[in-house]
Amino acid sequence: MSALLILLGTALAQDCEGATDCLAQGLDQALVQEDDSLGEALLARACGAGDELSCFHLAATRLRLGQRVEVPASEPGLAELKRRCEADQGRACLQLGLLHDKGPMGWRDMSQASMYFRQACAAGQPEGCVQACDLGHAASCAPAPLPPSAPQPADPGP
Image 1: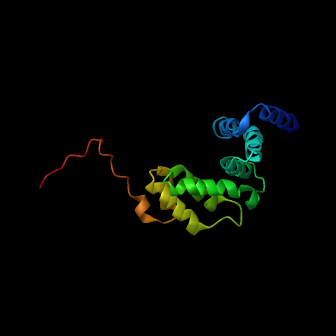
Image 2: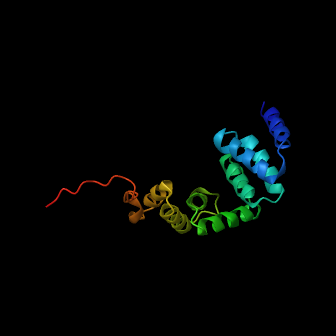
């Protein structure tokens, strides 16, 4: 049965056109449809076409599948995530934190994980705050301030 699924995944992966299409379909399969095998096939095609972000997502998918991931195969994707994190894209910072927190041996670095989780939190990713708090960064544990458009609590007065 699993050989049939792999064959089907390979056939479907050949239907995507270009790295962008393969990336979009691969992420949909891996993250939305929760079909890591098909997602892996699609992401492998996009990564093979040189799409850096696809290479990172391919590595993350392979980690979920319990496969060994080689660092050099994922470095382009890591570089892309770092660029996005530096541009205050919280989701990218969160992904980097998770990779350093839960990634394969050799990638685990709790000080890096904590740094990326704090950056994710600062960029508005609540999950980054939770992860940073779990790693002992107390400032991330405080509730986020209400946005200016939110109703403010009444002042009880003196």
